[in-house]
Length: 173
Image (cartoon, rainbow, N blue to C red; front, side, top):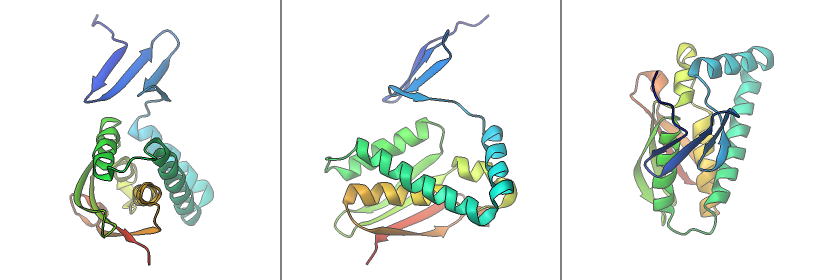
């Protein structure tokens, strides 16, 4: 029988298990592990009951609210480039996919991200579903951190055969 452990660190992120209680924390916040297939079943169930249009609204609302919540953890910081790197690491270490920041200009309020292997891409691969949650989440996070109205466009889409989704975020004039 292999030895069990109750603590693991990936880069600067820490996972702790209270094995007997069945509790997991990720950076001291309660967390769960969910299999891609279980998440896929949940999302397909929501779409089956609510329909595609309402599911899109649900994912956008979820992304916006989560972006706001996450931004609160970084409020008051002015080193947005470091925040983006730190959050990209957190995002990757949680198994949500990999984010590469290809362009960042605080002065121009312009950011371009490559999102590789997101859970949204994995969960919706069979339906060729365009990313909805992640662009909304990231633009919401940036909007609150910059305290600016932001918008986004998706210039490359994994559903169209690209290796990644490329999200361009910019000031909403």
